[in-house]
Length: 404
Image (cartoon, rainbow, N blue to C red; front, top):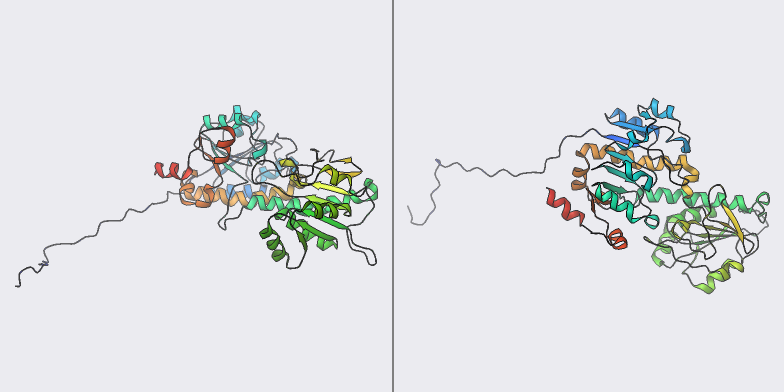
């Protein structure tokens, strides 16, 4: 036998090492609490009776506070019939490991929060207080926000549906206040043969702006859209499938167009903090008497200098002979539709959390969901909040990796 050749003997047995795979645990049963919202003008509820029925039939327990669905015209009976437990004691709901809310956590909720609780709710950056964040950190809460929750396509489903509702509602609101019965100009938004169409100016080409544009065009109005983001304006044209008059936010052009419009809609907003003010008081004073301003960005401060916060009970005020509608949270005025939209996103998400074996497991496997988490076991994982309140920031990816 030639020297140096390897010897292969049948007496050896060669076995590969086993690969260790990440095995998902079996699905866990969830106990979900839905409190009645006490936040100002919040009529929505995060899970409809139909969604609760699906969760209960999957073996989960849902506890609903008495009259929680009243604002959306869902009586307790509907929830009881769907299999939910109805409680008259608010503290019992807050004892559930998972809380699902349609309004942000408010200071009155803080004493009721449990250690290691999971809260799924909006966050409302502009109204957030440091005392709320600090107390939630202290109680080692895991919190998921509606605003930053992403789906598998990388879109923000709840934000999109709320924006669609707001955008759809705008033309109904405008039409209502242009009517003679509401001391408006007595102008119809629709297109009538032989009469020039009503003119609508939309500032902001995001989802609200796009849906409002679509509805205004469907009514036959003349629509002009402003935005400083040229990509958004192009996207708007593509999504509408037709050419629309668009412009970047150039003050002279904007001022000229506002002078002759019947309806001006402000739908500009920053991702965080205050909305930019792009319409000055001088521009508003030059508008036609009886025209209407609807400032959708009012929950972030508004983009008209003359805007002031109003409520669903007293939605308008008149300044410089121009009607101002500055109600925050427009979707809450269409609470049943809004509740269905939120529920359509959260019910499958809760089933997914269960299938994955709980919140810690789904965060490990679902990358899109990580973006929605701003607190994880009491660690603040949202950089913007940490900067705003000077609190310690922890990278969620590192936090999760360290726990495996």
